[in-house]
Length: 174
Image (tube, rainbow, N blue to C red):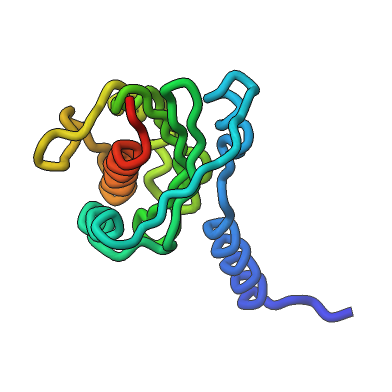
């Protein structure tokens, strides 16, 4: 039987830490988010294509081209729900946004993959988005306070809120 040296133990520990940093923290499954948003009666999804002017506007909000050509959404009785992803520092953050009458009703962090900035998942932060809408300049009409050490995650969630509001305005008639 071979005994591992101190160097080998250190390498194993570092690999373990590296792998745990890459693990996704699932706070809420997307299916659960949708069930909550629609009182267990989730409608069939719709699609909005991110091409033409719509794609250009989403690109302007994100600061980079969208990762996909289309986004799924769910809509029923004047409410729409969006499950969107944006990179914070280096890994995607999955967020669920519910919009009613062009205002955010709810924003939840569903899956967080970054090693820092996880504080954005708490209601003390996400509640700031409630009742936010898009101002004429395309920014949110509310100020979102940052979190020390989570600036990139805060910015990612703010961009996703703006994208959800913009896309909702393209598909809804309320």
